Length: 473
Ligand code: SF4
Ligand code: SF4
Image 1 (spheres, helix red, strand yellow):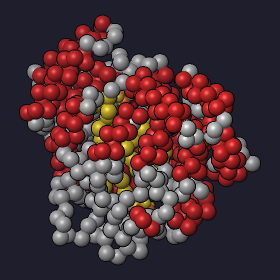
Image 2 (image 1 turned 180 degrees about the vertical axis):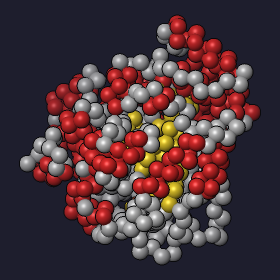
Image 3 (image 1 turned 30 degrees about the vertical axis):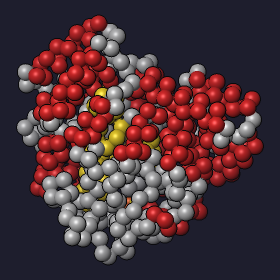
Image 4 (image 1 turned 120 degrees about the vertical axis):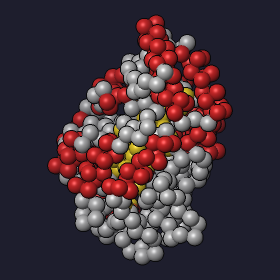
C-alpha cells in the first residue's frame, strides 16, 4: 500500500507503514549498532528517512540523546548560522464553517467575537505592524466561502503589499488558509505570496475525522493532498506542520517526515518550512481535554530530530511557546520565530481589552514587544533577520534549496540579515537595542567569507544609515 510517490493520501501517508515504523523503532531503540549507523548517516548530512528518525525519537539512551542534541546544534550552525528570521501572523477573519474541536473559531462557538477585517482595517493593522518593524507576515483566515472567499484573500494580499508607511513595507506575505483548489493556488501564486502554509493537524486518519466532525475540512484526503495541488498550481514553497497534542507524537512525527519525503519524491523539492505548534488554551478550548500533550523535553527532541532529518527545511516556532521554551529550542534548529504576535482579528491596531469578548485563536505565551524580542535575540548571540530576499529574487523551491545545500548562508543570508537588521535598528529600535545591534553588525560583518560580498554589504550598511533601504543579495 505504501507508495511515497502516489498522489493518494492513504498511500503516501500509509497507516500501515507508520505502524510498522513505530514497531521497528521500538525494536531498535536500544540497538546501538542501528542507532550508530543512523547517527553516522545524519553526521554526513544526508538527512534521515522517517524510519531512521523514528528510531532516534524512540531511543532514550542518555548518551545517544545527547549526541542527537549536539548534532542538531551543529547542523543548525552549519546551515543557518546564527540568524533567526522574524515574522508576525495577521488574522484577517475568524469566520469559519468547520468544526475543528481544538480551535475556538469552530462554527458552533457562539460566544467568540466574529470579525472580518475590511481593507481600511487591514491598512491600519499593516501600518501598526510596519511601525513595529515587521517585513514578513503570515496571513490567517478561517474557511468560509461566503465571508472569506478567495477573492477576499487576494484583495487583502494586494492591499498588504501596497501599503508603504514611512520606511515600512511588507515584503513577503505567507498564506495560511484552508485547503483549496489548484485554480485558487494558482491565483495565490499570481498574487505573489511567499510560502503556502497548511497544518495537517494530525496524520492519523481516524482521529482526524473525529477532530474535524463537520465542514469541508472533514475530508482527510482533500486536506492531506492539498500541498500537491498547491505545487501543481505553481507554489513551490510550502510549509507543513502538525498540532502536537492531538494524537500520539511518534505517529505524527513519522507522518510529517513521510509527507516531506512525498513532496521531495513527487515535486523534487521538500517542504520549505515545518511548524511545530502545540495545543494551547483558548476561548472554548481546554488543552487538558487532549490527552496526548507532550512535555518540553519531548518537544525539544522533536525539534532536534526535524533538524537532523531534513537539514534544509526551515523550522518555525510561534508565540504559542514561552520565552523559556523558545530559548531552549532556538539552538536546536529553529530558523524562524514570530514576535509580538496578536492572534485576534484586528489586534495590532486596537488590542483587545481583558473585558472584551475575545476574537483570538489561542493564548499567546510570549507577550514581549518586537523590540524586546530583537534585544533578547541579540543578547543570546543571534542575528535577528527581517530578510525576504529569496522570494523576491525568485529563489524559491529548488533554487532556494540549492542555496542552502551549497552552504551559501554566510555569503547570502548572513549579509541580508545584517542589512535588514540595520534597517530595523535605524527605523524602529529602542536605544539599547540599537546600541547592541550596531555592535553585533560590526562583529558579524567580519565573518562574511567572500571579500567582495563583505565589501558590498559594508557599503550598503553605510548607505542604510544615510537613509537608503531595501538592499539584498
Ligand atoms: S482550525 Fe482553521 S478550519 Fe478549523 S475551526 Fe479553526 S480556523 Fe476553522
Ligand atoms: S537570503 Fe533567502 S534563505 Fe537566506 S534568510 Fe533571506 S530569504 Fe531566507
